Image 1 (cartoon, protein in one colour):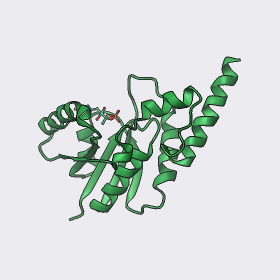
Image 2 (cartoon, helix red, strand yellow):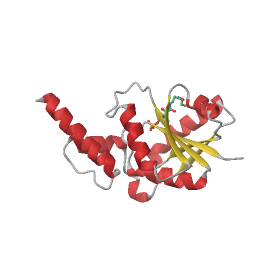
Image 3 (cartoon, rainbow, N blue to C red):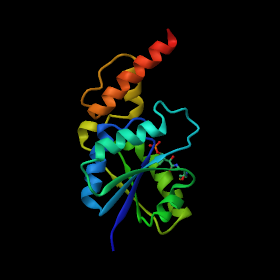
Image 4 (spheres, rainbow, N blue to C red):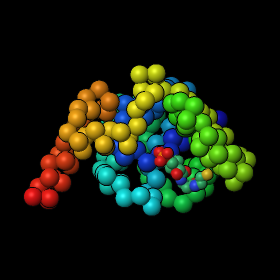
Length: 166
Ligand code: PNS
């Protein structure tokens, strides 16, 4: 039986830390579904369509990785896709409490789904989408922190926002 895993998240935007985790998971599982949460209360920086497009571009070379969106309960999506595993990244101890809470709640919701925690390369242990957005909004460089397509999209989004403000 094929081992299918889901890597869920907001990916606003995808960073090299996410990409590192995608590559590690793609090597470990037969199939990996990167699943972008559609409806968050937070106002996203990139639309869900933009995030799907950027992710599809960066995973294009991995034949066993697909990108999609989901809403509702994560475990329901995982079961619908007949996956057995949720992949989540843990960068530092500070991530652990939130991740543990989510993993245990998901286990309570479905005992058929297992959460697997993975660590990105230490170079990315301080990297987050939030910091990337902040640095980019304040005119700093995010080179090496995000894939080139994301760097480009961040720049054009900033230009668009600046034009709207002027
Ligand atoms: O990248 P993020 O924002 O940390 O990802 C959080 C995500 C999308 C994994 C989480 O918010 C989620 O699973 N949301 C779906 C709703 C759900 O199932 N909630 C119960 C989780 S215990």
